[in-house]
Structures are given as C-alpha cells and as structure tokens.
Amino acid sequence: MSYHLLTKAWRQGQARKPIAFSYILSRTFSHRSQRPSFGIAFDIDGVILLGNSPVGGSPAALRRLYDATGRLKIPFVFLTNGGGFPEAKRAFELSELLGVNVSPSQVLQGHSPFRELVKRFENELVVAVGKGEPAAVMSEYGFKNVLSIDEYASCFENIDPLAPYKKWTTKLASILDTEFDESIPKHDVFSKRVQAAFIVSDPVDWSRDIQVLCDILRTGGLPGRNVGSQPHIYFANDDLEYQTKFPSERLGMGAFRIALESIFNRVHPHSLEYTCFGKPHPSVFKNAEFVLHKLESLLYDDFDDLNHNNAPYFKTLYMIGDNPAVDIKGAQQTGHPWFSILTRTGVFKGKENHDKFPADLVVNTVEEAVDYILAKECAS
Image (cartoon, rainbow, N blue to C red):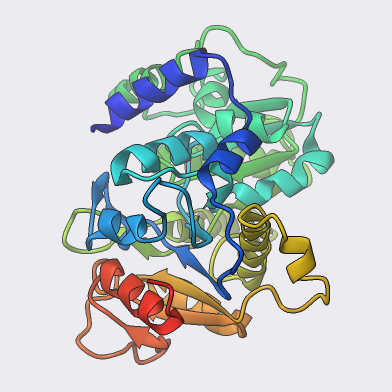
C-alpha cells in the first residue's frame, strides 16, 4: 500500500468513532501464566523497512511474536530516530505494511521525548520543523501555540530570497497539511517571540529552514528585529546518515544540525546552544525498557504478583539495529540488560563485526535475529 493510500486510510479511520488505545491493547495482548524474561526493540529504517517496503523478512519475523489469534505474546517496541507523524498514525501505517497489530504505545520515535517539554512551552509560541506533519505532532503532545516552519516562513515577505525559484515548497505544504493557509497567520508572529524551535524530523528545504532558523535564533525569536537572546532549539536525533532504498546512505538530521551550527557560529558572536535527543543516548533505552515493562504488565493478569519482589523486569533486552554508531553504541552505553544485534540490511553492510562499535551478534536480516532470540529464549 502506498504512502498516500495509507495516509488516506488513516484519516478515514480518524473520522470514525474513536476507540481507546487501552481497549485496543487489551484486545491485542494475550494473557499467559508464564511471562517471558526478555523484550525486543526494533529499529525501523534499514531493519524493518527500506522506504515503505518491508525488508529482511520483517513481516514473518514479527508474526512470530504474536499467537495464532493475532495477540501479542512477546513484548516489543519500535525504537526509531525517525518520525514526522503522530505515533498513532505511524502505528497504523506499520500495521498495514507489516500485517500485524501495532499499538501506538509500541512506537517510540525520535521526537517522542518532546512530550516532556510541554509544561515548559505549553502556551509559548514554538516552531516545528521537518518532513511530514511536525506541527500536528507537537499539537498532539499538548503544545498549544505551534506553527510549522512552512506556516511561519509564509508570514514574512521576502524572508526566503530563493522562494520564487521553488514554488513546490508551498504546494507540498498544502498537500501534507489540509489546514495550511499561508494567507492566514494563526499567531501574531510580528510581536510574539518564538521561544523554541523543534526539529521534529528531517528538514525538507535546507536553505530556507537554515535561513529562517538563523533569523529566529539571532534575534531572540523576532526575525528582522534587533539581536536578542537565543531561543531554545531541540533536535529529535543527531543521526549523520540513515538508510533508504537508495544503495548508499542518505544525510540525516545530524548533517542538518552540523550545517545550521556551522553557519550560525559564523554569523553570530556566540556558539549555537542546542539539545539533541534520540539514540544512542542511554535515556532513550531506559525509556524503552520502561515502556516494555508497561506492555508486559498488560500481558498478564497476575503480573503484580509475579513481580511483587521488585525483581528486574527483564533478564535480557534485545536491540536490533543497522547503525553501529547509533543502535549498537546506544545499547552498549546503556549496559545490562541490553544485548545488541546488528543486521546487514541497512547502514552496516560489512562481512565481519563493526570495528569501533562491535555488536554482541551480527546477522544478515531481522528474521535471522528473531530466529536467534526465540531459539535462545526457548520461546518459539
């Protein structure tokens, strides 16, 4: 199913009567008397999918984590630095592409930690940058005054000197966001300062976005005005490269951050101050462990009794990834109980283990990784 068909189907689903995710989870997860002592975290790009196409036997591998009725029997999450869409929409798309029931709570994206910043910026004007629906993501998290960089830039005449040569930018924005109208500013951007910029996903128009972000960051949130204190800027991840259907790696958000920082530091007396989230930061893996524990608690009626001694939730947590500097490094830095598995379907294509960030196990595909885990854990 194509991306546009998936998007259309998701929107049609949104128009129907909403169903509580807790109900979906209770229907999806089976209740068993013997809980597994392990959980799994899957990277998506280069492990589960290349673009919108499954890779490495991922549908068959994931089906082994469900019982015959389609109910989850092994707790797992998707732990990705990617994003750009709300977790519910991404879960719907993954379910359609992979043929299994994926809950929104199983989707941990690079920008998911932005939820923790809602209290700080809930009522402040913030700008969301990136492909997909960055403003919708932030609004769903609870930010009440958020504009996409498409909307924000459209409020300022001549802010992008190259705009006359790339009319596609406005057309693309109108396709992705049905509520986008560049002639109607939602906020008074000429007097209200931008307090923070959030790079939600990979930016599309680097030249415009770097220009507008430099304007925001140099002036204290009011482009075209006097220089002011730098607003906050947050990056959902710092990946230099990632894998798509193209044979060689593509530049990611980390590359955009390097470009923005280099330019800002040349045009401003003070160095850019920023915060990056996403793998390989150990906090991301710790959060994944917490989410896996919550998922596991839905699998068993007697979970509280089983864990009454506050014993460790899992003896082993498996991180299956394709990027040694992100997936494998993150699992290694976090330490026990994480066990790293490196696939050859994405960024890593070496015959042997990676020199700098060697994984605990190297396999060709995610299907081989799941085979290994289930054989080792006697859960097949």
